[in-house]
Image 1 (cartoon, rainbow, N blue to C red):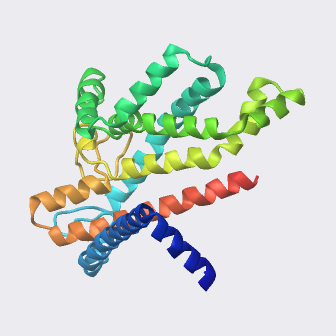
Image 2: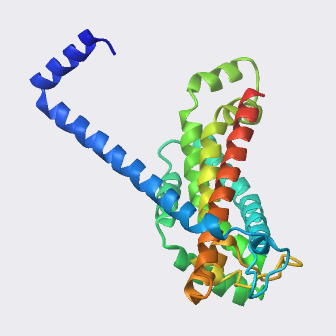
Image 3: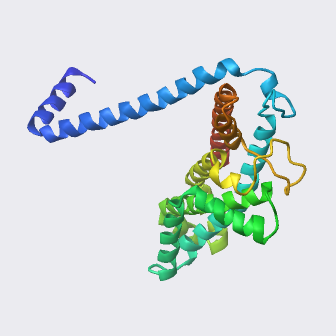
Length: 285
């Protein structure tokens, strides 16, 4: 920024002091947000890194090594199965709402209000529902499948709403151009609209992964807290977040709980990086 432009900006702020106040408040809010994030990261790393050792990454869990490996495997399995259930239903529902439903349709309004309401429901409510329906009514007991289905219902509104907004952001000229070239509705959606909306859809998927990986309350009522690699989808297992909660609540391995938080943080960063890489690849192709 040269001196002339800086002088012009100062003069504009002198004429409209309200803009200067708003700018200062915005910068202050951004600085506080970044500072809080950095403080949390540094605090977790300082308290957790010293306790990362070989015992913590043993293949089998016991009361001495409190290994995180079974929890890491359970976390990946839980995230994959939950997304397999949630993504098709979320994207399919969004396609119907944007591409097929008539404008002003009351059903569309009801679905949108319901999705926004479900997004704000506490996770413990989802956990109680999963326990009553999947664990008790369907006799799945505490299992990976019961937890994954519960999490799929939990993140479904997020994927639906973000996909819907991504599809609505695609210009109508794309649709008109495709129809003008003789393409049908279905071909236009899968060849033109969905590829253009991939970045927005992936953002919803990344948000869903973050909620799945960090969930505890819903999984304690559905997947259980067994610290072992599951033999099947109907076996009980704990994720990294549940593992960290159990260690911290017992009070015997608080240091290892901080180390688990570091592992969880790294896992989330890796998953987000892979998702962004895939999004760029898909967008280029």
